[in-house]
Structures are given as C-alpha cells and as structure tokens.
Length: 250
Image (cartoon, rainbow, N blue to C red; front, side, top):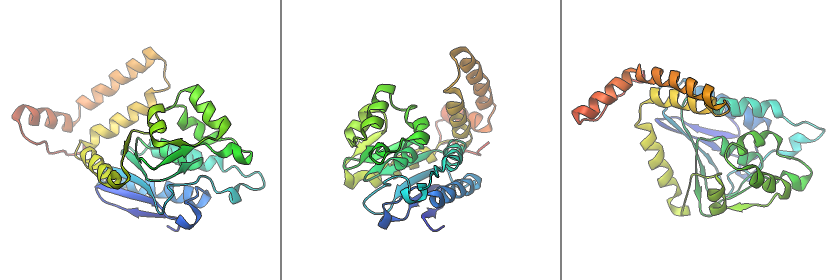
C-alpha cells in the first residue's frame, strides 16, 4: 500500500496517508481501498473498521490531475462504494478536518460518521467546473434533496454542526475527544454479534430502495435468518441467564 495505511485488529484502522497532498482520492487510492476492504472483510478477527486521514485534512477530494483529459474514474468509485456496502462489517469515519468532494463521498459511504467540531464538509466540485456525480448516490441517502442541491450548486462548505443537522454526520465531539469517542463507539459495536451485524447491514442497505410492501416482506425473511443464528440463541440465553454472551459469529 502506497497511499493508505492498514492496521488490522478487532477494531481495524484504514488511514488515508498522503497528507502532503491533502489525501486525494485518486485511482491509486481507490484501488488500494478496495483491496484493503476485501482483505479486512476476509479477516474473521476484524469486527469494525475505522477510516481516518493523516495530517490536518481528512481528504480534499478527487485527484484533479488524474481527471484531466476527460477521465472520470467513475467505475472505480462504483467498485469502492459497492465494496464498502458489501463488507458485512461496520465502517466508522473519524473526521478531524476538511472532508470535501470525493473525500466527503467516502465519509458518507461509511455507516457512522464521528466528526471533530473543527471538521468541515462540502461538495466543492462546482468551483472547478465539475459535478459530484458519483458521490450523489451516497449523499442523497443521508441529506434531503433541497439541501443536497444547495451544497452541490454552491460548493459551500458546512461546519460540523451544520453537517450534523442535515444528516451527513452521526455525532460531533470536541477535537481533543474525537479519537477516544470514536474508538469507544467502535469497541461497543465490536462487542456485538458479528453474524447479526453482517445480516443487519446487508438488510439495511438492500431494503432502502424497495417499495414499502416488498421491503416488509424482505425484512420479514431476513428476520427469520437472524432468529436462526446460533448467536441469537446464545444472546437470548445469556439475557435470561443474566450473563455476558459468547458470540460464535454464526
């Protein structure tokens, strides 16, 4: 890996690691992220993945030099966002500074977003004559249409509290508390049944674009799968026995 750092563990960490360039999301980084997520997905010891950025900026967005000559790199973002939603393991973005353009798309693709009160967010592509095509699919699933279009048409940057209010961010904490709060949350999630989490994440993302009745029927079938898990039996037994469950991951 040349543009990211990967630290495995129950709470694994993936860090964008080109701080001198403000952590651009270019083809090389997209490819390395897809590879890293595949490896972490296959690692049974990994329960949660924290995504961070080195240096003062989380990510300033796409690598504009790689876009010259009409190269959009859209297929790579298809691979990346699809990989993130097919992980079966929760992703938590830890955003300490600016997350802009493609960097914002990467943040919003995560399941949970923890932000420093010093972080900023924006779809700044319009300022250089571009449009946030690929990240639209992620943003409009978190932000209402009018607010999303205002962001995209103006390129205005939102502060952390504005991002929280409009749904881009899960929680805002003081800068000094960001890492501790993020790792505490990730640790709490890592203590849950990995089998139930995997089924739950899959159902959450697949159900969101269905019509209401088909969605209910799909979720009913997925509930049956959850109830059939050994972890479900263990969780119920532990609750009734007033003890800590021991998950088997199946």
